[in-house]
Image 1 (tube, rainbow, N blue to C red):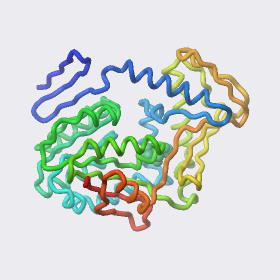
Image 2: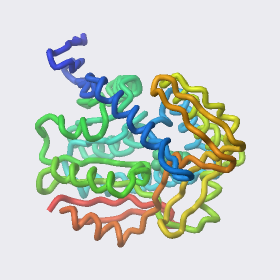
Image 3: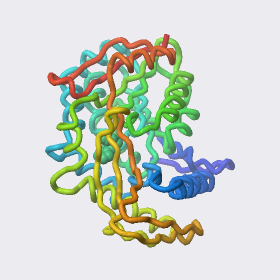
Length: 343
Ligand code: AVJ
């Protein structure tokens, strides 16, 4: 039997013996203000520097489109990372010992199952702390996991990474491992990335782990098709962001007035995703009291996806108190799983 409760702080939670879900974002008033400010800030930048915050990709439709991207023939990262986990999960888990698995952006938890299976083979106690902004997907995947792993305990946190990391419960196994898979770290701008890693290191104790799944730098001949797929799913995923903004902010974006293109930026070793206005027009976002002018060919940067170099990342992590223990790759070294430990 589950119980739901609301506390005076406006946080709600749901729990039974094996499942506890905590909503750490319940005061969504602040979240809404931040979202509105981020949109206004991004769209009012001077000519040709317009940008939108990537969190607007992930409404229900956007999450579906992203799941579809993960299965596209050109989009190698998901299956490459899954291959590394399938091949090396036991080795990874043996390096970590008995550990609570914290996962940032747990989503459907598909890849995490490979780590849980490996923990189960070692007879480790199974404790999983998924963190996701979508309460729906978190509840659904937690329910499935509890059915499939009879000894698993789940403590889920619904909120942003920052909110949730600040609210982790006391550790109950010898160590904790924060897993951040799918190269999602690559979607963070450098300053955001610094802040997140500092918060991760500050949250963990000596001997705890960080497991990062990172897409590695490679030829644009492989990168660009991965973000410009022939079925146009990545384009639809980007245009959907404009529909999402229309819904959220009473807007009148016409997504079909924008072309999509993913471009590799060699100076920054990153993919950059752009929506470019085909013609001069105005867009109104009523709830933000905002009118935006687009000139022909003017672009909105919707997302960056940084591509990593293992040696540079090793130094970067060391500067933040994390020492690289081991890296696992696919045979082509397109993707890396980096295990680091708090010194
Ligand atoms: C969220 C990091 C997994 O950057 O590759 C995929 C997002 N955007 N295609 C990435 C994305 C367009 C993706 N990750």
